[in-house]
Length: 284
Ligand code: AMP
Image (cartoon, rainbow, N blue to C red):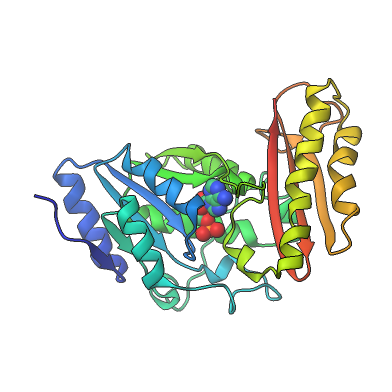
């Protein structure tokens, strides 16, 4: 018999439930999110559903991965709406702790993935990935998954989590899911709700830039400078968009590349108005 849907807020209760599930021989998958769920998140849930006996969704807007000038306080929150979407997509349990439950007074231990955390998002958002790696490892310890599912939308985050799991011997399989986009190309993001209709149009320049670079790559272009220039052009032509970075990096080590000789990732971050959007495309 299928057990009833459960929401956990207390880390100790969640951990005890996960322990019971493991003892019963159930395969656990976890899908960590910050809520404000969209079709991208639901795709991760369905991916997990197809590969595990029990799917745990976590919803936690993690304060330690936001910088002092970022959107922590206004980040969209809608737990009820999220659960109404996630349940039919196939979750069995949700873990929705408070910040106080996750960071008890005196918390001072952080995980850093030294090299991979430096460039791209790490350069623009100091401390962000220490917050991410730390909360993900805490969520792993509490939900005890066999499998964890992340989106390639946050390419560097996925690379960092894979490396952390390898380096620290977490016994967890990490799977990545391709970026889910609107039909017009815009990568789904919880932050898209901040965009006005004009900004929504301007935001299409990100995926257009990536498509332009991919077309140049397909046509044989291998120079990093030329591929980056191809990606920048449509974004620079858009008055409402302001580039934070557009960079071509090695797909595994995230080191700089002059010419694409093995798998590379074109990653970008762009402000559209006050909203910072990220997107990427692997060139292989
Ligand atoms: P977030 O709630 O933004 O922290 O995202 C939670 C998870 O959903 C992360 O693993 C993201 O990479 C993933 N995700 C967010 N947007 C998308 C998308 N458009 N396509 C695929 N995965 C996504």
